[in-house]
Amino acid sequence: MSDVQPGWQVFASDGHLLGQVDAVFADYLLVRTAGLLPVDLYVPTAAILGARDRRLSVQAPAHRAYDLWHRPLKSAPHG
Image (tube, rainbow, N blue to C red; front, top):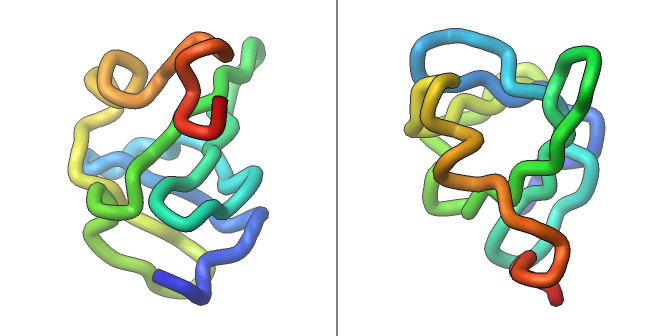
């Protein structure tokens, strides 16, 4: 997934738009969620199922993504 760039859209396994890639790191993506109150998700690259046309799909349904990948700032992977 080395070609992933900020701005790519990220979709859950159930087809719902999670948000867009805000930053790319060695082993995870920082994804800013779509919606009125955006949240940062730290999505491990191992969770990416596929990439096509600047769109990524990940292995979790939308209702689980927050529980799996939201981290308070002090416990974020880069902190």
